[in-house]
Image 1 (tube, rainbow, N blue to C red):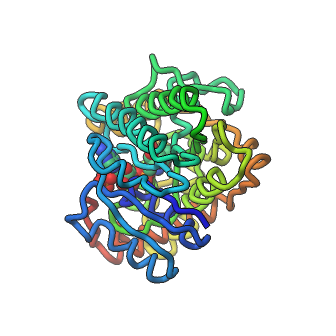
Image 2 (cartoon, helix red, strand yellow):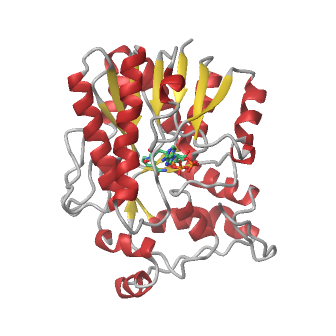
Length: 348
Ligand code: NDP
């Protein structure tokens, strides 16, 4: 049993990381930006009550030094999950890059000062394969890095934050660092503040897209991402390594087919028609999220999770289960509407 700090407790991934740690008997402290809005972390109290573990929340912001020394005090391990991941790109890329990079360094510096044994940093395949031509058939591995000159603000923030973490690790050999690099994280939500990645499934199930663009992703289940974080923390030989955690390329059309087969009979109108490029381009003129996808039309996302499988003993559940469980969770939380039931809840 370890004493663990998890950053960004209100987030989609961190909620599952905390649940997995508690279930495995670890004692968890977790950071939130503010303790003043308990509705944003009430789901964590429910998880702790159900599992009976030890969980405490403390305040710390990635953009501020305050709170980090107290947060890491007495911890064996730190899982640094927090990073800005907004649904639409910010006006200025520094709004993402600064908290991502400076926040990672704040967490690492405080951890080194406190004598923490290992810090697991949540990076992304966005730090591995972004900005590069996807039409090459080669699978990306942990040897690859995103092309900063061509990457959008979010992948840039993840790449720069991970690079900063490895530079810090090289200068502080007493502190072990591991990165987990997930693909598109899907799976059940703990609460209404859905993660940015799950919004893709919500948009399909809610018929917010008239047709399906030819976009490919390397999805992974949030429960498997959580387990990868724990394994990255527990497996002795993991120190100093990056681990990609993601499945094979899945086209959006395959995701829509699964959602249609599962939820169509319940009255959910899932678009199935392919969206021609010109239509995506036209939608992208008004929708910044869609505009970001234009560069990737028709190219699969190919990354390899072989290293995590062989070195961490990690495995993934079938992607059909992940997509179905995401849809079911969105329906249960009232975040999508069926033809019979018109209401949809607002996201944060
Ligand atoms: P969420 O948006 O759900 O969670 C992000 C978390 O980071 C929230 O707790 C948020 O706090 C916190 N955060 C953001 N900015 C700050 C800040 N300045 N100070 C303190 N906390 C901050 O995203 P996910 O759970 O999806 O992402 C979690 C991690 O996983 C991120 O590092 C992301 O880059 C990475 N990742 C996610 C993938 C995905 O597909 N979801 C894929 C690959 C990597 P608050 O609630 O207060 O805003």
